[in-house]
Image (cartoon, rainbow, N blue to C red; front, side, top):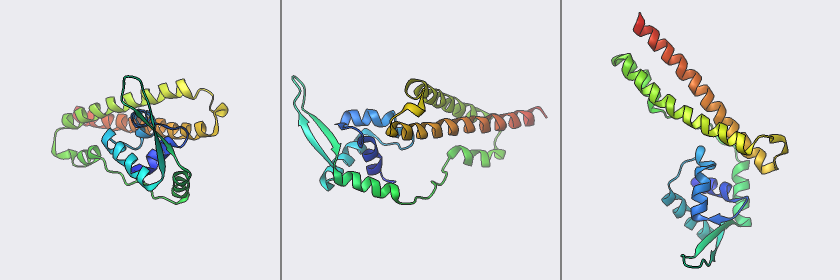
Length: 181
């Protein structure tokens, strides 16, 4: 996937400014596709040059003009074509797994400290996902079609974090037992 597809996906339901898109990205697509604000703005310019999005300037009193971006018919067609293409599962690249794989050359405390650090981050992300679920997706069957598909990505995030935390607990328990023996 390219950043262009993530931006088109974030814009397809409603036009917004680059700043609002970057904020929207952080709270939705950004959970599974990361990009800096600079990357988003560069990609917006490319997408506009290609005709996949259009923009209009909105006058603002006492502030710089705002550019409002929206997906064109061509952009929506490109997104539909990309969605229809099969994709391969993303290979795992995880520094923590490499550290654990070679963890036998350091003390278990070092690995446990690293696991605790990651555990906190995953707990925080799971909490964020659960809050989003409570706030926006209490009745998934009543959501509009686009909301149902957004909910499916949230369910994936919740499942991933829950599974990761269960695995982390297993590893920590095993390492703690090894220390005691």
